[in-house]
Length: 155
Image (cartoon, rainbow, N blue to C red; front, top):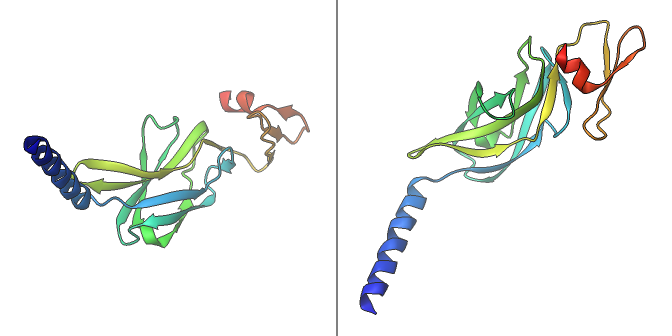
């Protein structure tokens, strides 16, 4: 009986020490919104709400392949709550994401991430009217023809 108590107490002490050592901030992403349609080269506000530890420095990253690989945006304070991101020119992707990561003793930890959104290269002669019903977007070209989202991203 005493051995179990000692083992449990030792485990809890090690767990508490590890938890206090790797204090991870907590946040909730508020933009860009899930299923939004963004334009390459435009400015987009990345915003989040802080739940815990508003003093940490974190890294913002974006993915254009549903989270398989990540690209650096900037390092900032988690307490800032916003960052004005200039979306890189040349991106034409269907499954983009933004996330906040924090470096801890055990490596990078994702604090918060967005849902999927799209980034497209639009020329000045094309207007985008986003209609997200069953993940379809309508693009109206100057010739007034409509292109569905899947066709647009295959170009």
